[in-house]
Image (tube, rainbow, N blue to C red; front, side, top):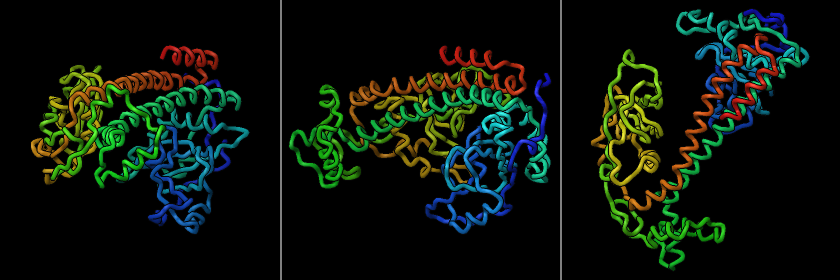
Length: 440
């Protein structure tokens, strides 16, 4: 369906369109105020300044002779990958690395947030993909073509309204992601406090006046310095922890009564299941590969919650799967929790250097028999049960927000082309957003 708005070339509505300097800037191995953006920093409508490379002031001046990157500039990756888009929201000293284009919207003609959504739309993504296969080795968009992309141009106020609707959905998605990061960080911090730093044991030792081993004195002093700011556990949980430490020749100072065991005494890992791609049917159950989620299938092999880690290809990636799932043959999954639980095991495996147990030559491979022999200290199952009571609702809430994001993303992707073509009116879109957010 055609648009009711005029069709223009991008060069007609931008004050600035520049490409990067076509060579890599020399970087330094220390932090400076000057950061180089690369293609991995541009994705999904956003520009991240995490993992930027740093340069000197002199290099920054040379590489910004065409233009500095400013707030609300829109960036496009010309190759590797082709067609990723993001808008700059950070007020920092930034410049373009290789294979990036920079667009600065003319403020009287084009709203920058509207521009980034236009670039994300099927219309513009199709124009970008027309250049696939244009390179001898890697597909790329030629710089000259980056000035010729065509877009629909509503009145400026309409652009802002459209961008505002879509931004409200993206902001909700981002908020949910931030909440999920916080929830997992809280669960991980509690795991570390109980099972790595032994904070409850230190608290009990301080309260009982028992000696603290020299190796743990610094931790004890930090705990004591908190005084009333320490967040005490309920008395019935605090008493599950001992009030003294004993020395173990292999493990060092450990809580009294906590036994030295191997990983195989705590949990049993099992190889995942074969499922060729041509036998997969999209369904309700996640497929888990060595690197994490890898699509869905109509059947499952393991009842959730469950834990996997990479067996072949990528080692050390640990996944917690709340729902029923199918672990692929590149994974190991936990078949039995002898002295553990899915939530406890999820963080326990993350503390282990699994990638150091690579037994493959060409392809990294993890042998579960080797991993089962890793020496560990086992907490009583009563402690683990109470840990689960604290964190289970965190992970259930996290899963709920992940499902909510899927719904919101689907709504956004449905509204995007209709709003940009004028097929859907602003009031109707606002009502759809309001209804979706209330329902979720």
